[in-house]
Amino acid sequence: MMHPFWGGAGAGLAAGIGLAVLWFRRRREQRLLKPLREMVRVARALAGGDLYPRFPKEGRPELQELAEALNATAATLEAKLTELGRLERVRIDFVANVSHELRTPLTSIKGFVETLRDGALKDPETAGRFLEIIRKHTDRIIAIVDDLLTLSHLEGSGPSLNLAEMDLAELAEEVAEGFRRRCEEKTLSLRLELKRPARLRGDRDRLAQVFTNLLDNAVKYTPEGGSVSLSLAPEGEGWRIQVADTGIGIPVEHLPRIFERFYRVDKARSREMGGTGLGLSIVKHIVQAHGGSIDASNPPGRGTLFTVRLPATRS
Ligand SMILES: Nc1ncnc2c1ncn2[C@@H]1O[C@H](COP(=O)(O)OP(=O)(O)O)[C@@H](O)[C@H]1O
Ligand SMILES: [Mg+2]
Image (tube, rainbow, N blue to C red):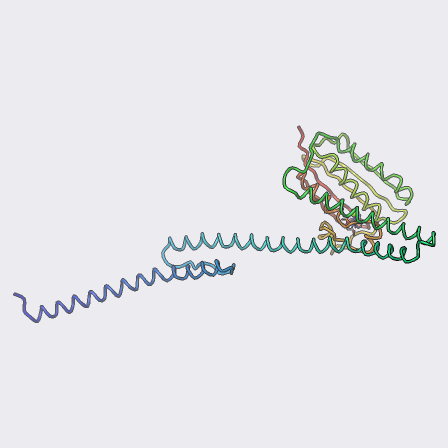
């Protein structure tokens, strides 16, 4: 039989060990649970729309791995939502810009119509002048709407290109010929340097618009006596198109933005010249739809140089 002393001490020791075990277990649980609690807190914050908290990398390696994976997910979500926010701001700006661009000529038309109604009609000369102004503003609205329709078609889902085998040099020449008269009227020399044939699989009408918009700008923004040149040469697996002029040029701080919709260096001047501010953004869309790229630069001297690169899918 055990001595009562030992029996009492043994029970005390066992209780002590039991307590210690319990205490250690609890501490281990606490240690395990702490990162989990923190993760729940972060998950709740994310669910509540706060995109910035991140899961702590604490505790067991499996938990750390989980935190890392969840953090990567949170970072992807944050990037996507930031981009969506940016696109939403672009859309809101765009709607505001379109409304403003259309409102300006419409307000003017309304003003002239009212003046005509209030008596100006009786003076044939004034009436003729006003009608001519109304016609100009109407043309402007049509040009804006046409460009917007083109953009919306290019930006829409589904195939927007009508691809066929074609000769880019032949197209370039054809479009450039259409500018001959305007160049002569403005005493601009128009030079073509075309490597031919320049076989390419592309959308003929859309690519014609690329040449038209770039040449139109070059002619528009180059004062009398200057020159405009269009060149086409092979580069790598594709073609390089360059439209250069000796005109007013684009200040370097504006260069990064000129492909944006409605962006113009001088709004009043561009409008006065019949521009919609959408030409270059249409060009960029068409070029990108063909898998190509475009950039603008200020060559040494003066004027502007646009370079388009198109990959040729030579079959
Ligand atoms: N060849 C050029 N020389 C000088 N400025 C140019 C030239 N091409 C484009 N720009 C500038 O880029 C702006 C955007 O061009 P674009 O989209 O074609 O609009 P716009 O309807 O004004 O021609 C123009 O308003 C003009 O400020
Ligand atoms: Mg233009």
